[in-house]
Amino acid sequence: MEALCLSHVSKSFGRKKVLQDLSFSVPEHSVFGFIGKNGAGKTTAMRLICGLLKADAGDITVYGSSVKKEPVKASCCIGYLPDVPQFYDDMTPYEYLTLCGKISRIPKSVLDSRVTQLLQTVHLTPGPHRIKGFSRGMKQRLGIAQALLHRPKLLICDEPTSALDPSGRKEILDILSSARKETTILFSTHILSDVERICDQTALLHQGGIAFLKTREELRSLRHEADVEICFHTPEDLAEFHRIVPEGRISGSLSLKISRHREHDMLFLMEQLVRHQISVEKIERIRPSLEDLFLKTTGNEGDVS
Ligand SMILES: Nc1ncnc2c1ncn2[C@@H]1O[C@H](COP(=O)(O)OP(=O)(O)OP(=O)(O)O)[C@@H](O)[C@H]1O
Image (cartoon, rainbow, N blue to C red; front, side):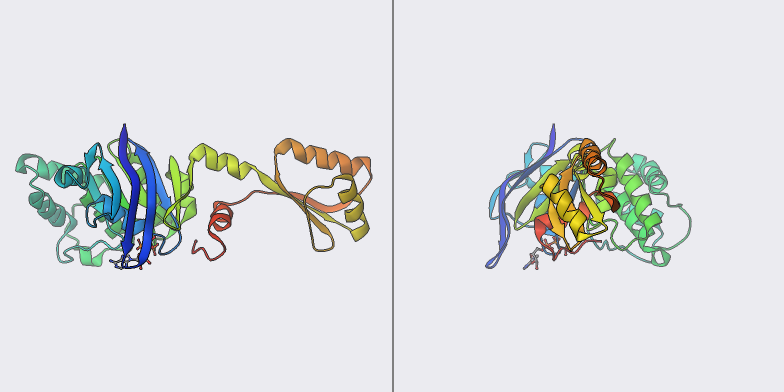
């Protein structure tokens, strides 16, 4: 079943068109990664899904409920973690989650055990420590607990790992990854290795629409299409080799770059070098990183880490 479906969604702010004819869907119990440059419209799309903004055109459905026609039904399915979650800093996490649970009208009989269980899930202790002393990572984890409190079918997290150190990021990613058993997850990030780590599908938002949408396997296979760089000792060796294998792009006076070679092609290139007795400084496979794919699609001004 589709947890979320966006169909031809557009949104402008004044004359600025942020989203144009945006369509994609997210299968149930999957983790969907949303990447894009600063200002690409990731937060706008998430706010539209949550019903915090109104789309100019198009439809959004959450588990079959239209955000436009059945906003309450749709929003009941969603847990949202904004990019900068706000808390009552003088409370302990236990007090804070209990307050949120009361506001969400979670029955008293189950609230205490739900809060205790969620604190465990996000690795926070129900002790007397106040939120104001928490690290960023702890606050993000508390934000995830808050968003999961009412057992949403769809969890939306806006850059949950940004500004965290590698161990803080790993904790968040592990929590999100295991939360997929109970919910479907859509999260945005600038940290491309994070989407590679846990996302079943990754969408790149660019110029108002989806520039690419890849499954984990597709991303992996794209990254297997490595370039090969051969560095020669002399320009004459390079010219001789390029006459025999008229492929690729000469870069500088000693180097040849051949795109998208697969494993077996490397053997072919090496055979040609041996057969024609051309010695080389080095021959190397260069796998594109996700950053390379991102920059190739968006131009070179991408803001990625
Ligand atoms: N309420 C608003 N009024 C006017 N313009 C807005 C509003 N909200 C967002 N925008 C503009 O829409 C564009 C998309 O913003 P959005 O925050 O959705 O991008 P983003 O992809 O989440 O960026 P970032 O990665 O920097 O968080 C930006 O140019 C932003 O200035």
